Image 1 (cartoon, rainbow, N blue to C red):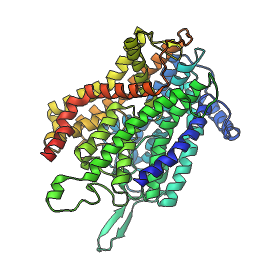
Image 2: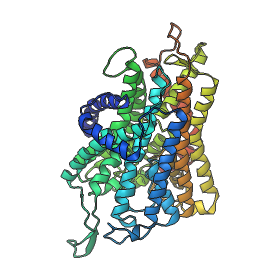
Image 3: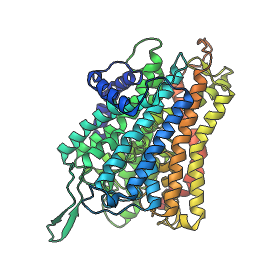
Image 4: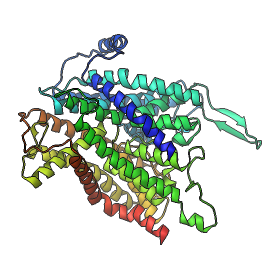
Length: 564
């Protein structure tokens, strides 16, 4: 457990410091990098013809959608003709049409669901120009949308900013500097950063083995900093080159946790700045605490489930003193595997350092439920926006119970906002459950299920939960590289990303245009311990009501079968 405690001890001061930095970047205040990066930004603005003027809400959303669409088009073409291009020392063939569709949607939506194996499916050019590039741009898109959302919610004036300015500043001031630091740490630990082709070596048994090389460290850094999750290799961060040591494992976990948590800190400072300066605003602290409670409950559950082991293995007379080690790396063990599993699905990254398909039923239920909730910190930017929907819903429900007019930061929450909030919350489970139903009802969907019974359903639920939550991890026993799975998960990723962002920005705009009311004695306090626990209860209640029937047929049934 001390390994887990060390990560949290390092994380808390780091996330607060980063949150203060994000706050300054979000509000375009001066930072210590400005003397250099202002010049870099100016060149980008000039070359791209970007005018630094505020946009309307519609212009902001349209700019986001169109810019992402253009990147999809270019990236798809590169994947389809990669065999004809340069930087392909391993002679990788062109990617198939439906797999290219799935891959390009996956990376533009910050999901990084992979139905291919990177070392055999992509050239170095595709790894850098499509995969690594989109890891930067998709992360920047999500955080730019969060910037606009937060400014709208707390603004005293009707302002949303400029998407292209936000987009550029996120990359130059946040993603690029942080990624360079993490990449250097990973190289120091043994991750390759080279354009050389795969090396064939002779093993100690006298056999030949291909060692996959490439520009791995640079991809790994933004993979975690941007909560992307897609691996250079098919086995992701279980492979020694992507995650060589315990130190690299800790760095990768901290990288995943850093920006989503810092977004909450930055939001808290934006709210608190209307009153007084503080280290961590009370409003954001309530949200951060609620997310932390959900996270810790999940972590403890996974750790205990994996430490207990598998009763079938015990019946065979095999000792499980180390816990359930099936699918885990010896260099990480149960503790760091359980923490990594919880972090990567709570912070919706999708990177893995152990095979989730081999987790015990309860151990596999937690990462699945994290993605179904999609608010346990979530990805950078979008996780905060998702939780804000539950914050507004909790305020509305609480005020109905005590007979008060629901309002947040002086803005009344009325019928139009509540309809959009309800729609936004329901879209995510609708995508997961409807696509899962389609998968188990069609021959092409059933063909991908490789396990019978409850675990087979768990594979399906996990795949669509991962796609809709823009996570990208999977129960990799699923045979998912087929037309059905490529197209269905591609659509799930697309709708799970863009529809919710559009609705959330619309809700923020509605609130921004309302008349501000002063707080009174009867105003519901949203920065108290009571509100924090009420928020946790609402999140769990809605999650249980929505997903418990499906989970009962999957991991819960599997757990009962294991111990019956």
